Length: 111
Image (cartoon, rainbow, N blue to C red; front, side):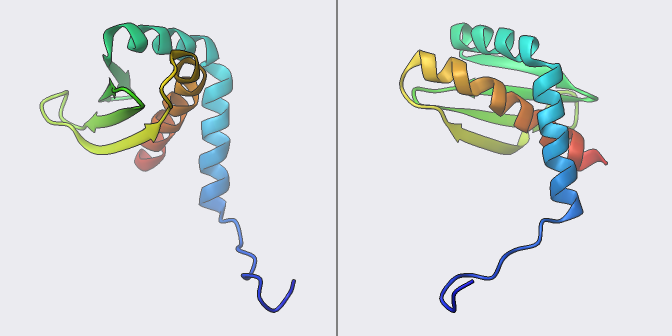
């Protein structure tokens, strides 16, 4: 380490658990996430159930927004957004990762 380089950061146990969960979800639900991506690309909005919560995905020209409802879809809060690019091919490629990330966020916050 040089004097000008930033100090190395310790990876917390929580971070390890979160990323393990996200990659596990991506691996186990790959086919479902790919189907959801196709559906979202057609409909532009999609509701999903994650454990006891309702999630809402909204696709726009260059990205996707996710909002979660803790009251059975009455109100949506805690939004997350990702940039996916203009091309449908890029969106189809990156949406499954975004689905795994948002599902992991929702499940992880409950633990």
